[in-house]
Length: 207
Length: 133
Picture 1 (cartoon, chains in turn blue, yellow):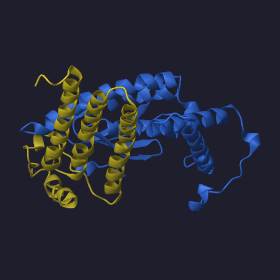
Picture 2 (cartoon, rainbow over the protein chains, first blue to last red):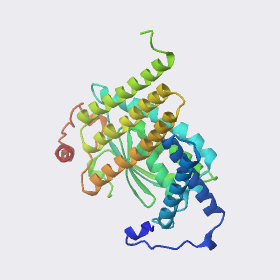
Picture 3 (spheres, chains in turn cyan, purple):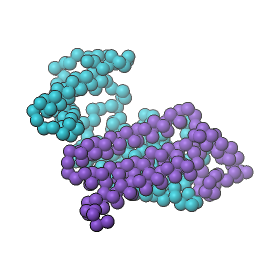
Picture 4 (cartoon, rainbow over the protein chains, first blue to last red):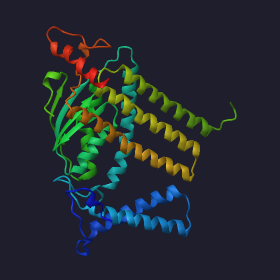
């Protein structure tokens, strides 16, 4: 029942009713509803028996993962569900899709161009984001956008490989990182600093 | 020809566009010079390709339970794709594979122009392409 036993550094903790508060309740309801939606869509049956099976399965999954959920892998890790501002996130997804389509067309046209005018470069920068989850969202968004690839994140330092100056413009001018900041925090401030762009192997940052 | 409905035409356009992006991604894997830029072509141009194909299938399917299942596939591809390419690139960097970086002027379309002032670029061209082969 306790999945943490599989990972040696983790400890199995008993469920402690005294830590139940608004955050844990929201988290439980959100996870349960998400798992139930997943179950119902995959099964396609809406009668009481199938829904009941789904509810039991969802509860077993939540109980199994409860011990892992309490473990923190990073110092600045916070629970994601209550930290996300959902109205901003819903606006962020279509904005990112438009960006993905634009840069996919740009990258595709570079690849099929006879001269293939690429200019591969490494960009390193530091970010000022509130939590590890925000950095994860930024890193995933950068990688999901064609033409840019998050190679490493160490602390607040990002290492990004880019195919051309057009593709990394959105990172260097702070537009994408600021959107990510908006998803996680109500305050608005510059996120990216200490940007360095290298076009030569000899000046590679130490990763 | 006239047997197709408008929705079927729209979904066909999406699917063909998606397959086109995947084809360009495959061409990119062959044309691009080193491991890191090939990772771009292999995973990222395909992101839009797969998304377009699935959107096309969703339009074809209409508002049924299968549309929901396709939407889940869409979400999982969008979550798993960047993690996979990040893991590839990070593993390559950790194992010491240097990326091939250059400016537009040093690039003749197929290889880096070996400049006498910059011997390291011409030399380093061997290791990334050799390592990614």
